[in-house]
Amino acid sequence: MTVSIQIEPDTGMAIATCSGVLRVSDAKESAAALWKTPGWSGNAVVWDFRAAQFDFDRAGIREVAEFISSHQPATPPARVAWVTLRDLDFGLARMFEVFREDPRTDFRVFRDYDEAISWARLPRSDTT
Image 1: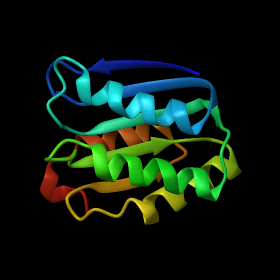
Image 2: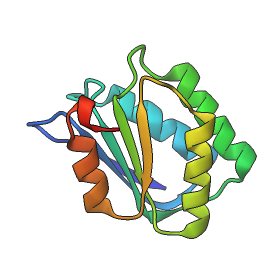
Image 3: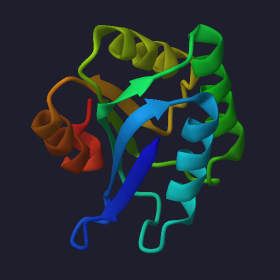
């Protein structure tokens, strides 16, 4: 799996573009890489999985959610968007949403990249 993380200079939002087969270990490593990315200070993040394929089951997605909940920065991102095209990946992303539930972070799954970007850029009070 390959991941490229870009930080928007004017918003501080991270856009993580992933491709290839995404395993549990890849997901954990990618999250940790985001947290260490220079210029990212916990603002919104869009994970673009359109060119990726998840290679884990329900237990794997739960493991990823638990890893993120226990290792994320003290102040998690205000908004997290996942963009995926495959039905199976979309369903797993929805499971992640349930497992990772954290009232400090608004999380949504999208099929449309531009819609995800627009949502992630909204001011905090406009995300609901």
